Structure formats: structure tokens, C-alpha cells
Length: 146
Image (cartoon, rainbow, N blue to C red; front, side, top):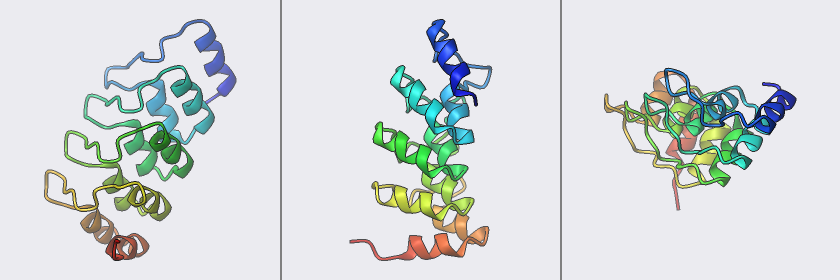
């Protein structure tokens, strides 16, 4: 996660869309590790915020599931789809809920995330947060919506 290295690679015309065998790009790695400055640089260089790995996971899911609120916020501002599910029908909200990232969940809820979308095993974000003992997320998901 070195910003200067990323800038140098882009200056040498490195492909921002280069993928590994799993379909992982540099934006995935920056999102997963919370590297906001690198994510900004990659998106400015036209990295696709809705590009999915082979398993359907998006940069937003990785940022959300790892509790990186600033990267999550940035990706949503750049039109990342808050309801884009992976191959198991897991959404960014589900990822954040199951891992107890209450502020990320709050942000996604405020950006029209579907709170009731269940995964392929019929588990919702509420179920996932409750199963993992994340009471603050459960309380947030149960709050009345206007």
C-alpha cells in the first residue's frame, strides 16, 4: 500500500485493470486494506468501482466487510452499487453487518442499502449480525425507517 509506488506504476502506464487468477485488481487490494489515497488514485485513473472478482465480490464489499468507512464512503460517492451482491448473494451491507462494523452499516443504510436481502442460505444482514453477537448492528438494523 505505497502511494508513491502506485503513482510511479501508473506513470509507467501499468494497467489499472490487471487481474490475478481470482480477478483481483489493485482497487480490490486498496479497498480491502483501507488505502483511501491509493483507491482515489486508481479511480481517478479510471478503475471501475463496480468491477467484480471471479466470486462476484466488489471493492465496496471488501471495504465494507473490513470496516473501512472512508473507503466505503469514497466508493459510494463514485457510484459503487450498494446492493451489488456476490455469487453467494452477499451484499456490502451483509459483509459489514456480519463483522460488526456499525458505522459502515449506518452509512450504507443512509445510502439506500437493501437491509432485507438474504444470501443464498436465506441469511439476512440482521441474522448475520445477531449470529455473531453484534448487538449495536442489530439495534441499528431494527430502527424504524422513514
